[in-house]
Length: 120
Image 1 (cartoon, rainbow, N blue to C red):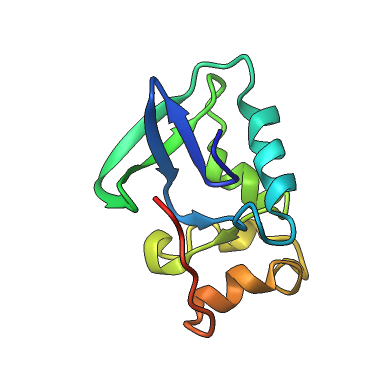
Image 2 (spheres, rainbow, N blue to C red):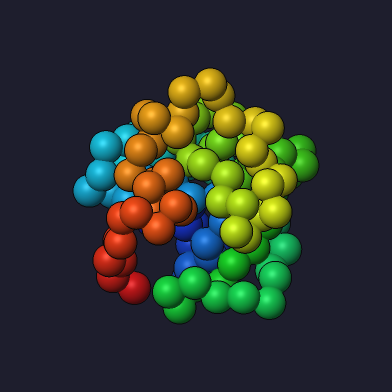
């Protein structure tokens, strides 16, 4: 795992489609990463790639063997936000109340109020 919205499968970096989690140096970033590690540990992850890339990463919907959508699970846990620009709002209904205040930096980025630099 790289962080709360990026995983590595067979050496390939894959960005989870439709969500955005805090970066590692932001509040909740480490917690998001370790939640993703906990979700994925010991499982074979299925990635359904879309046609896009993000910071030289492939973008995909990723699933656990039981069909659990990793993006949906991270949003439900309050450790990632739906990114409507890319999801069409598919995960917004799963966001816990108050999560946009908790993950204010992620929310501000989506609204164009905070420019984030990310290293590939």
